[in-house]
Amino acid sequence: MSFPSPFPEVDIPTASVYEYLFSGLGDADLDRVALTDAKSGRATTYRELVARIDTFAGALAARGVGVGDVIGLLAPNSSAFAVAFHGILRAGATATTINALFRAKDIAKQLTDAKATMLVTVAALLPQAEEGAAAAGIPADNLVVLDGAGRDTDGHPNAADLLAAGAAAPAVTFAPSSHLAALPYSSGTTGNPKGVMLTHRNLVANVAQIRPLHGMVADDVVLAVLPFFHIYGMTVLLNAALHARARLVIMPSFDLGEFLGNIAEHKCTIAFIAPPVAVALAKHPLVDEHDLSSLKVVMSGAAPLDADLGHAVAQRLDCRVVQGYGMSELSPVSHITPFDSGRLDMHVDAPLSSVGWTVSNAVSKIVDPETGAEIGVPAEGLSETGELLFKGPNVMAGYLNNDEATRATIDDDGWLHTGDLARVDAHGCVYIVDRLKELIKYKGYQVPPAELEAVLLSHPEIVDAAVVGVLDGEGEEVPKAFVVTQGDSALTDADVMEFVAGQVAPYKKVRQVEFIDAIPKSSSGKILRKDLK
View 1: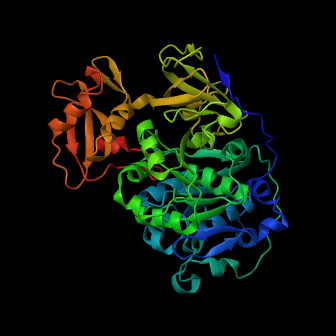
View 2: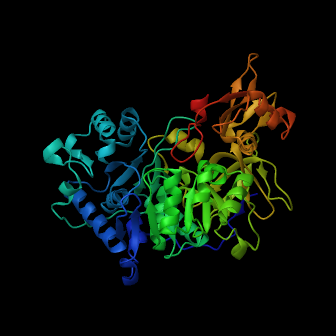
């Protein structure tokens, strides 16, 4: 049977993202700092932010950009990214955000698939942006380099060129329920990346769904290191924090020393992370050199967080650690642990091994992946394992130009099939077991890689690990561990296999080990298992 959100319904206005985030700004909020670029220390108030967004939208409109156009945005986190992203949406266009680590070939592929007519980037990424834009048929005058030399120098307009005319923001009309705001591309960890069509209503709905559960307020200072080009950073950090009138301390990339230093310097109260950062927070000696006492909550997402690792972070930082769950196709949050762990609304703490409850205005269910039979919420304990399905206003409009993939993901009744295996407890908390497609089948038994990775990370000499299925000499799929150790470690493959074997069922044992320098991961922290395979 399905299980609805236990949280109160929220109002989801019929509004554009710009209207929803900024139309309610009062005089008291306008002069609050919205964004601080950590490296330069430059601060942008809400008054300045809205003015720059409007001016950017006006500049795009003056160049003929409007409803129906798609613009690529290739840049690391910065206040300029926030202005460009919301300026694109304010002009009525659609932003296809591009991974800042992409090479020219991948940039060209996304721009071409999205039918983008313009690319906005920064000078540091110009070589690959230039090559990618050219391959996608975008002329030099439509490649905007925000901090570049300018049109007269290299043929590419910069921010000054764009804003020189001082054009007013355009009056645009569109239906928020169907007009695309963002077109991120799925991570491609299990296949070819696909354009995820997210409407203005999708993005507005998801902020409305999570804001009461975050409990974020205007006095909060949020560390923003997760990339804004990824849906996690776009919605959970950028949009939700702006709606709360909080202050974002923006980092363009992750560096542990800078991460810790920014928390201490800016008195950050909330940090959103992915599990690889949790490993560093739990184990790295640098943590003890910084005053992190301002931190109230650390929220982990993008990949499953092992409970023991989460508790280690909470104990070391003396703050609450919670986790949530989502995917690009869900704008992205579908399940969440409130910042108080659920005490106020649910009168119980969500176990750290869970991703919390279904967000407001939505319904979940778990089905047997073989038979499709529904798995009910148990009276006590945990349910059987099955595929997690979800239905709500934050479900994408579909995959761009890919009806077959859309039909395979969203069924005729509107349920989105996540492809993740999950269980539910008697309180309605959901537990992610593993990716359906990433399960290792060993002699007929199902072996979840995430379970073995959690065991490996509990070893004091292992700083990171990933497990994939590989074929042995007899053609049998077996679990293989890729392990990153502490610099002075003398661990052998036999040591690793023995350590795991002592903690899991015999069929789940790691049977091959390879020591490597780093685990390949996407920008959102997901392990790129296809690269390891």
